[in-house]
Image 1 (cartoon, rainbow, N blue to C red):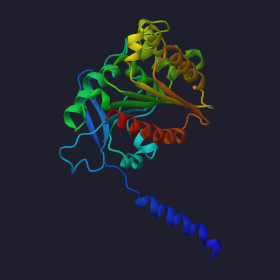
Image 2: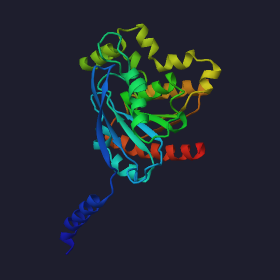
Image 3: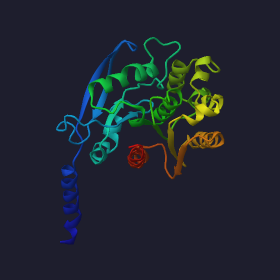
Image 4: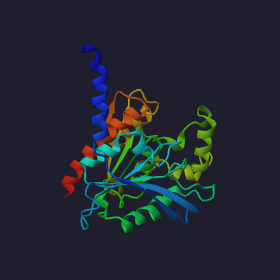
Length: 283
């Protein structure tokens, strides 16, 4: 009997996994004037969204990393399972390789303006969101972590909480001689050449340094984390030191881990717990 137990256990585990409730999602397309094409996005609905005709929900925008796409969060983590535990509407954003920035040179590559001027109004218009700052959150991994924090710094009236997991926070100052050519190309297209005005305008370290006390106090709460084995660990530590020096409200966590989906799968769970506690205080 004992020698068959592992096979029975695997069968039981697969059966239980198949029965695990998962949130419902749908894909949509926004005909973007800024981008000159249809931009896809994925909605993950709160449980009972379809049945509750009047109830409105907080919104969490999730940004993917470089070389990724808008489906990543729902396909490479167990987010669809985790979402069933919360009354949040999730928006999975397509950012291509544009660093969530408006390119100074590439036509129809205005990812920052697209999110702020087109996508957010589209979501609030077509879904039952609580369309105010206190109930709008944005977070992302790697390139998306950089993008989420940048959105929070540049548009503090839009978001109450921003989150970054293994964020590429020094994106605008990466030494392109030490990166792969396709990454360097994406950086040049997003920010221009080294020391360009576009790089300065999108440098989140510089944005913080240039703010006066009142601006700093009005920023959204910043949550960010990074694995201690991650190649982006130092830039995250440097950003933590800057926020501490400037007395910006934040929470920083560092823990064992690398630049992997296993790490992000664990950290999105932590972030959702934090969001729930944060919203309970707001409400």
